[in-house]
Length: 412
Ligand SMILES: *[C@@H]1O[C@H](CO)[C@@H](O)[C@H](O)[C@H]1NC(C)=O
Ligand SMILES: *[C@@H]1O[C@H](CO)[C@@H](O)[C@H](O)[C@H]1NC(C)=O
Ligand SMILES: *[C@@H]1O[C@H](CO)[C@@H](O)[C@H](O)[C@H]1NC(C)=O
Ligand SMILES: *[C@@H]1O[C@H](CO)[C@@H](O)[C@H](O)[C@H]1NC(C)=O
Ligand SMILES: *[C@@H]1O[C@H](CO)[C@@H](O)[C@H](O)[C@H]1NC(C)=O
Ligand SMILES: *[C@@H]1O[C@H](CO)[C@@H](O)[C@H](O)[C@H]1NC(C)=O
Ligand SMILES: *[C@@H]1O[C@H](CO)[C@@H](O)[C@H](O)[C@H]1NC(C)=O
Ligand SMILES: *[C@@H]1O[C@H](CO)[C@@H](O)[C@H](O)[C@H]1NC(C)=O
Image (cartoon, rainbow, N blue to C red; front, side, top):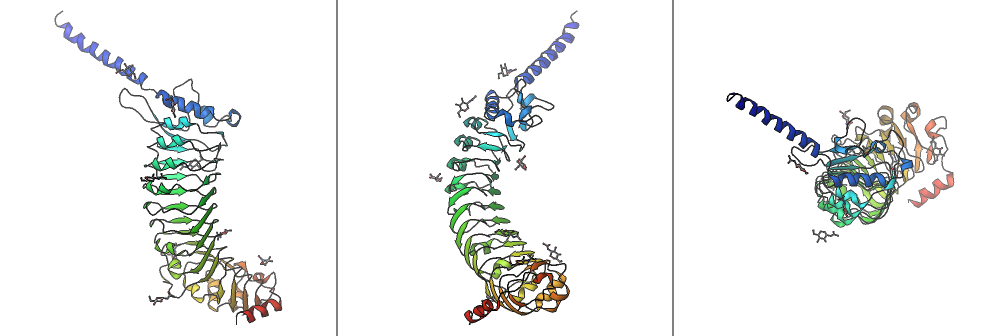
């Protein structure tokens, strides 16, 4: 007997361990306030906008969100607690299926969230101030909804944020001044809203790669910008002055400043930005383009859209030294003189799109324009050229003689 006791004792001990392990699993379900916050998120959405097979329709509160399996609670991720603590919701990444509702302040209770993505839905009203409680957020995307109101100043408390996308809403007011305190930002899009004011100093956002402020009502000058930017879009605003601050952005790949009131010259240090592929300066008041000091080998530029500016003088012959350029649009400017002979060779070999219509160009076309225009999309009409109408590029006709004469006299 005495020998049996020690052999049973470890067995009982094991049993207790197993029991307490089961207890642990049972108790480590979702933190109650997280469940409440998920409930109120779903509750604030018009049930008729939640169709079957969508993520939100799978949110069935009969089961525990973080313990759910299979097809329940799609669109959330939870932390896996190691000991006897509750699970927490760490990501909400909903499908974009036009859920129609609003965000309640209880969203701020999900304090372990790192990702909140509610893009492409119909969330209305304002962004709750309590969003600033989500201190661990790295991704916040509410793109393409119907949010109104202003960007809460408290958003600048989200110190871990890397990706912030509020584009495609109806947000008004100005950008919080302290937004450059969000030092980890790599992506910032506030495009397509009703934001106004000047662009604040963002140079503190030294990690920022993408900045999209397009389609708002920003005015004033373009400030110095974060040096690591690869994509800058400020198109469709009412910005004015020079674009010279972009000279410093050595990593730029795409630059769109179109549809503003910028003026001055497109200097060759912008054209020579070594990684720049896409440059859109159309619909502004630029007066010219500098190509004298173009560093030919280095530039990668493929697209140059300068339509509808106030460029005058001769077309720049040195444009042909930009090896990778294939799309050029100089339509609706005031260029005069002949089309440079050098353009012929590029048209034959490299250029795919060439719009020069609505200028005051004159004289004969380079011979290659006559022989090789079929592969090229473009337009030479509304100039003062000798442009044989059998050439597709010439369809549309030239200016009347009187307009050409006036321009020639005017430019003397
Ligand atoms: C959620 O946060 C609000 C304040 O925003 C608070 O009043 C409420 O009690 C919280 N709910 C839970 C379930 O913790
Ligand atoms: C685990 O925590 C719950 C409350 O959160 C408590 O009731 C339970 O006794 C704890 N279990 C253990 C083994 O500590
Ligand atoms: C957010 O969700 C939308 C719609 O489901 C998706 O297209 C987008 O890629 C997501 N964004 C991020 C940053 O995860
Ligand atoms: C900006 O930050 C400074 C210092 O951190 C603070 O004093 C100021 O109140 C903040 N301004 C706004 C508008 O949040
Ligand atoms: C340049 O921007 C204008 C808008 O201002 C747009 O219509 C045009 O398509 C853009 N050009 C290119 C080549 O993308
Ligand atoms: C071109 O570069 C030279 C030498 O660096 C400089 O003296 C000249 O002013 C530049 N021209 C233009 C138009 O920028
Ligand atoms: C530019 O052209 C060169 C030579 O054709 C090519 O090697 C290079 O990859 C091109 N650059 C880009 C950005 O396409
Ligand atoms: C060329 O431009 C003229 C005037 O802007 C226009 O009438 C004509 O349809 C255009 N032709 C083509 C082929 O785009």
